[in-house]
Image (cartoon, rainbow over all chains, first blue to last red; front, side, top):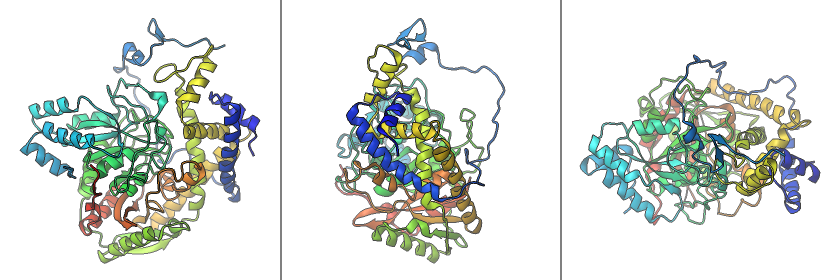
Length: 93
Length: 475
């Protein structure tokens, strides 16, 4: 069971503002999905290793050489919030 | 007048007229569209076609129009993932697949509608409104690449690209009566694909026939060092276009015909399997006992990865942004009003599944179940060459039928998500109809073995006529 307080807390962790009414709706909906996920408790997986990646590719290296990349102007062209070649955001607190 | 042409037919038409004329004729069909399959049309399509006409038609796809799912980055063409949060975002670079298409001479018509951030099975959650199924405008086209499948089915583009995280190419291919392939994980570079669940998703081609799928795979597939999960597979997909399944061993997993399957779907798929038998293949039942746990494992992993991948949408660098006194408030408000309901639900659930105290119960558990599901495939494919099953347990459902109940929508993915957990390739081909709506047969192969499923799908197509059926009155 996930509580309304927990929903509000994960909303904060995920940086998604949630109002009172939404918190109630999400609590119901998330519990219905989490109930379903509970079926996984039926299987014994103590000796099963996790799969993080499906094809056997490990440690992909390349030479550390400089290649052409996007210019600062191109990277900044999708925002109005910029200054002296940097993104500009409101202060953290 | 709507025409459904294969790539060779389009190229023939270009030779007898021009790419400009062919492109204009597709744009005219799109102009009369009833299905809302495109979210953005590219203003540069006609000039680009004209350039190719001037240069001569010497690329594999020289002058051939194509539609691109709206989560694949296209330089200079707005790319929104069907989301308000990316409103106005114009990528400054091309995805790997777009570079390949441009080099082959393709003409991008525009960007196709999709469930927001590819999270859905119905293309109803897009900020641009739902796409309609060309076979029945009251029904969904499937999702999340609903636009890419529907425009091909409606004759608005000969070919398209989608992406498949848990069935998002195969489901709409099945619902719209076209062919769709999800390659082996790593088969097509994800460079420039806007990530949702990166350990599961692959870009995949859609077309009206299997030959076009092979042609497209040979253009967009293959190794790309910019995607560190890209695999080196030198196979030429068009070499697999051989009408011969004699001796092919087909496995039929019981678990994919479970309760809730539509009788018309079940009948069409069994008819197809018996057709393969007539053509010289053999079949046997196989058991994949962890199938029933795949859906939960899939959703936990996908949501967890989504909560991380979608953290970048914070209103700072691109797209929509809201006001706030400090960064946290600005970002929280941007995300609250920029994301739709389903995206927010998945980010919240993923954040929860990864949070302190729940990580082992949900995320780690799901990764272990992923191992068991993968082993089911390894065992079944050790005895057989391919597996066959319904792509979707039902034909296309009605618009609005499932969207209010997230869990009921998730359950529709029961036959497609195990394939992504295992990372194996799978193709959906039309195999008949149920209540007048298309049914898809899913042919699943082992890792890197696109060739065998393409050969099986091609042979089926050569010996049946299901893929030639077209919806009426779509434009």
